[in-house]
Image 1 (cartoon, rainbow, N blue to C red):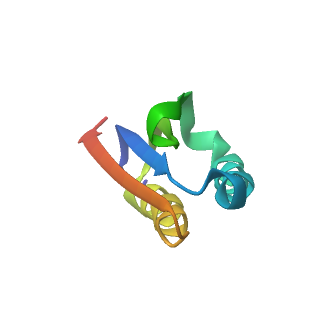
Image 2 (cartoon, one colour):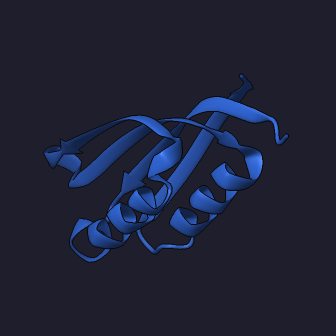
Length: 83
């Protein structure tokens, strides 16, 4: 059995108009490992921040963050612990 981890993924979007639909598509694709999601716009800087609480294998998490990180105007960071 593949070891799963619990953690948080932070996503900062600076190109909301062009990237928000794709970001949401990717998040939906990995919805089975998402425990919770919080999204906040920060209008003064025209950025949008999404925090995900996740539970999945490092391969699953890496696949999702890798796809998100390839998008222009999207920055992704994760912090994981053993579950």
